[in-house]
Image (cartoon, rainbow, N blue to C red; front, side, top):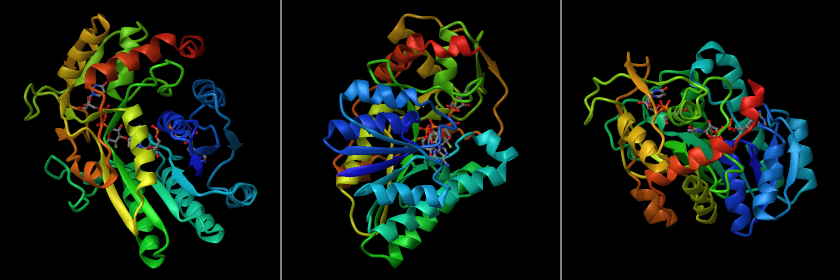
Amino acid sequence: MNILVTGGAGYIGSHTCVALLEAGHSVIIADNLCNSKRETVEKIIDITNKEVTFYETDVTDEQAVSVIFNNNKIDGVIHFAGLKAVGESVDLPLTYYYNNIVSTMILTKACKKYGVNRFVFSSSATVYGENKVPFVESMGLLPTTNPYGETKAISERILTDIAKANPEFSVALLRYFNPVGAHESGLIGEVPNGIPNNLMPYVTQVAKGKLEKLRIFGNDYPTLDGTGVRDYIHVLDLAEGHVAALDNLKEGARVYNLGTGQGTSVLELLKAFEEANGIEVPYEIVERRPGDISSCYADALKAKIELGWEAKRDIIAMCRDAWGFEKNYKDFVEAK
Ligand code: NAD
Ligand code: UFG
């Protein structure tokens, strides 16, 4: 199939392009490069030895999007393009609502016009709010604590309603847990803007000596060692989950958790990183981070049964590959 991948130059998008190309699909990337680099597209080509069509396009631009649909025979869309910094979304709500929701509407409008009936959407486990773990797809959504999370919940509702009204339009709403790691080549991976918010890139930058020590946000949560528990998933497993979702689209809008089903605490992840890479990572315990929940992990059964997909890579592989990318990545030293 010819797949339009919006946000395909980004972290999860680039790994998914590799997985799509390796599974025999063709890829058209539309990315405005607001949080990624053109050279990532070259890296995707280097890894796979396959051609990629690239459009430097903002997918909230209806005119520009229709050019892509006009010039290519598109069989399906995977919509990754979005802004994702939780804290920034609190300061810039309009920017987040506009970018993340308007893009979804423009793309579905183009799908309808051009008869494209396969749509896969990047959602987030954040839509579960403070439900009880493990999070199951049948749970009701609870309010999130920030505009970013709301853009995901609203986009899910929009896509669900569109699929209801258009029975030929199939949608997979993929709720990601905590994607980490990188392609084993070390060529593509996560490049956060400025000081990382997320745990794994923070850990790799401490390991590299760019940051002094990790600050662990709270050790008084009701978890095994008091630190926050998350469901870390290797980005390559996540990427393969998209190929499975695309290949197994059914009528209507269907929700799938893409997680491992396994909770790991901050201290456990730190230990795994040290063990996988033989590097000590200094840390201190500080106050809880506002808005954090104690535990977040998936019930991963539905994706296994309906998509025939489950995560295969363990936490050691995640830590090894995250470090493999970080230690190879030159720009970030130069950018400093
Ligand atoms: P990323 O920032 O690396 O990738 C997003 C890409 O979209 C970037 O290349 C950016 O340049 C592009 N983009 C943003 N707005 C655009 C627009 N209007 N037009 C065209 N391109 C645009 O982020 P990621 O981690 O790869 O996340 C991909 C998707 O998955 C996002 O929708 C994000 O909200 C979602 N998600 C990510 C996580 C995570 O922890 N990384 C968790 C849950 C959900
Ligand atoms: N943590 C630290 N120190 C840090 C960074 C994080 O102790 O410097 C802890 C957090 O308190 C949390 C865990 O590490 O317990 C994971 O934190 P992340 O910031 O890596 O991830 P979150 O689970 O908070 O957030 C992620 C995505 C969000 C998404 C959310 C729910 O970043 O976009 O998962 O799916 F909304």
